[in-house]
Image 1 (cartoon, helix red, strand yellow):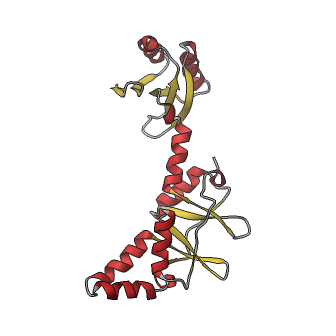
Image 2 (tube, helix red, strand yellow):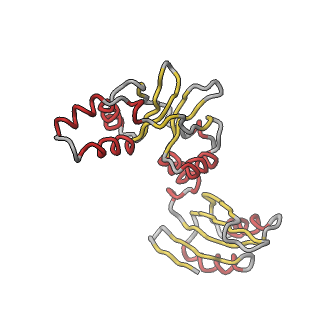
Image 3 (spheres, rainbow, N blue to C red):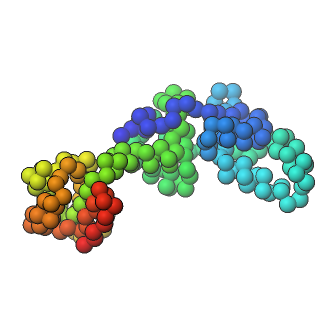
Amino acid sequence: MLVKNWMSKQVITIDANDSMNNAIHLLKKHNIMMLPVMEKGKLVGIVTDRDLKSASASQATSLEIHELLYLISMIKIKEIMTKNPVTVPFDYTIEETAEVLLKHKISGVPVMDHYGSIVGTITQNDIFRTIISLTGVERKGVQFGLEVEDRPGSIKEVSDIIRQYGGRMASILTSYDLAPEGFRRLYIRMYGIDRFKLNNLKESLREKASLLYMVDRREVKRETY
């Protein structure tokens, strides 16, 4: 899943010599939290709603409201922006981008093409949308958490059992985190199975894997093992 397919392509930017007041207006108007800062057609920085709130708060205790509003209209973006902003290329994967955001403790980044031009922005919210799509959670259904042997065919064995009971897979995700050596965690979301067959399905799954939990969202019901 590539950034170019999930990024916001309508890029709202601001000039480095523009005012802080205009930045506040743009964020509110477009309901966004980040503005790439441009100068002579080049990306030179980034300003976020947090930067604007911080800059405003630093003056708020010592100024009257009319003085504060005047100051905000006079402060230039280049005075408060973050220079040399972190960016990602448009052909990065979503998980690589999430790693960048986590590493730098930021909520979003500009997306660049191979010529150094900004072609979009991607934020935590965009990544959340991707996760929702990837996991199939919108289909509700039933999710199984399992621990299987880390060997060829172990995932197919489990998925074949689910199909035998009439289940249709919405997503299959795996991870080595929290699993002991020689095993992996397997998370399967499925739908379309008769509820009266669930107990038999669980017993069949236990013959091939360790059942960690089952979450049945059709009745907002949770069972944990």
